Image 1 (tube, each protein chain N blue to C red):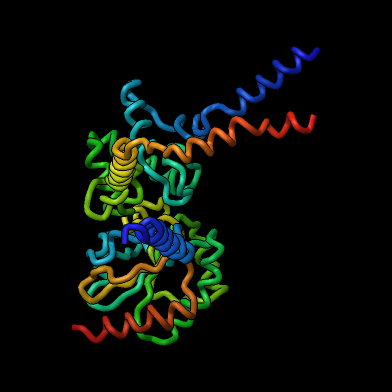
Image 2: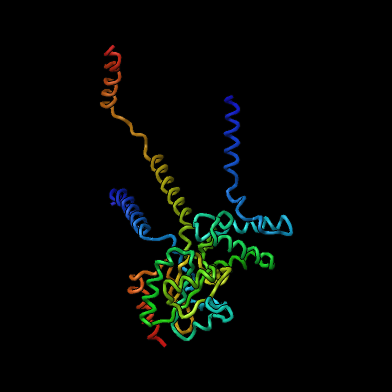
Length: 163
Length: 179
């Protein structure tokens, strides 16, 4: 009984959690080859929809995403290469459509920022480790040693006292 | 000095972070700046809304300061904006053209009949291809062009009386003043 329930639940999860964009629209497009279809899918995965801003053109069901997918499809059929297609979209919508922004002065911060932070962290870590190595282990004086012995040796631990 | 640095550096980083986050609060991620601003308007030639036999093209907008407003009857905020467009048309300071975007002709004509017509003329963009060339990603959007046909401003979202008084009208006056 329990087992059956678990398998039904698993099935439901599997059905519900399939790739979100599998059923959206790709069936409307006809491709000459599997490779061409894959090329189209890869390309629209890399492009961002302007309406649902955190979805790619492949994932979005927005009206504009439909239109832009059709536009990309037509350009592929016309034999345009990826660069031409991307240029076409960037000229109209800006770098925003790219999930992979180009490296240029205005994007240096996002491209190199993490590495700069990593470098700073590494330097700080190295300095701290070195400093600890260089400080000699401090010797305690005879007076301190005597006091330490007195504390450790003479008084029994608190717990024992209570028992 | 180095003793204070331990405290000052994290404090400085904290304030930089606060400044960025505070700025983020007043930014609208839905407003993606258009790369078309400062460039000549895209060429187009479309049938007119009112008279499908006649065409409206980019050359009709050139030689004067002009406005192209992208709208549709399915667009809810376009209705709110319509009042503002009528106000702007009444000032008689600029020719407003419309791009009726992915709409139905009968509905669009009905809309203008009911709500009033602020446009000099409307282009009928049934499949939205001209819209894509203009970088349209959600109606309403409004472009302002100078006499040479260079796009000088793009307003994303519905025009408001505020935007009209503080941005649009001053810009139009400015563009009218330059030959």
